Amino acid sequence: MKNTTRIILGLVCIAICVVLFLAFPTYSKKPEAYGGSMHVLELDETGGENTLVKRIARAQFRIMNADTYDFPKETIAYYVEKLGAFETIALLSEVTDGLCHYASHAIGEITYEKTKSVATAEKLCGDVCYSGCIHGAVIGALKEAGVELFDNNEISFFELADYAKKVCESEITGACFHAVGHTLFSYVYPNIEEPLEACAHYENKGIQHYCATGVFMEVAEQGDMVTGDPRNMYPCDNAGIFSAACYRYKVESLAEDLGGVHDVSELKNICNSLEGSARRGCYNGLGKFFIPTIRDNMPFINEVCSSDHSEDEHICVQGAIEMDAYYDEERALRICEVLTTEELKETCRASAQAENKHFNMEKSFEPYF
Image 1 (cartoon, one colour):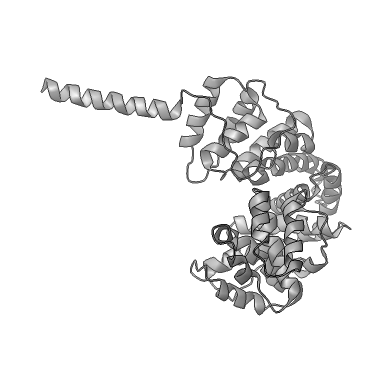
Image 2 (cartoon, rainbow, N blue to C red):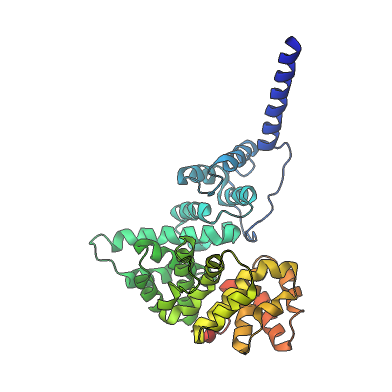
């Protein structure tokens, strides 16, 4: 009996040690950057060397809402205060394998509250967690404006869109206005008409497009694009001038509507049934959707993007390469070399080497409208 008790106690001790080892590693490890690259210009790590706090944060992030990675803002605020924005988002990214977009919104909001600067949030967080921190900073700025604009219950999305111009004054224009689209939609979910009207209020086609992609990405994230019927093009069949922006995100939902099928031919049949900017946007979405497969089988990009219309092929390549180069430019350039024409290779290289990748403001936006 005593031996049995000792064995049980010994096993319990071993289990406790394993848990402590996992939660509190004894080595100092630089977290790998998932979901973006850390291009931090200066760190705000007031407590960045506080190893114990970092270990506790890592352990807490591992056990909190593991399915959704949706952490309470108060928890995030505590670690931003203790560790700084950079260390907090690095830990989130490490623990969640980069699936921390919405959780990192809080980091951006808190950083904006402290600095009143979206540009500062971008410098501190980079594009980690798929630019979630930048989105959060814009959300914080627009919420601040929203209190003033909506006090009299006279909601003016045009006023809010104009205010966003001041918020998005740095070099991250595309990403910033994409975040504006997310935020405008969140005010009136599930109504997409007013946010899209606000996006159309901008004169610059690139800003219009990225603002609209923010609206439609939010629709997709809410699960509203999946209808169960691959013939149902909601909401893209009523997207007006923003059909291309919508179909960029609709393709993934159509794959779910087809029963989770990843057969490129079935999805291309749907794209080929569309016309004009809707068709081109659908091809852009094909490139974006199939990039994980293309990474493992680079020549597959030729099957995904082949079309009787050259504009379809070029915009499909942009959809794939802008997304991939955002995280690994060298790999994206290797994909470019397997394309079958020099013209497509040139489009591909330009997409891979663009300063802001899939928020590139330098390309022509005519095919998207």
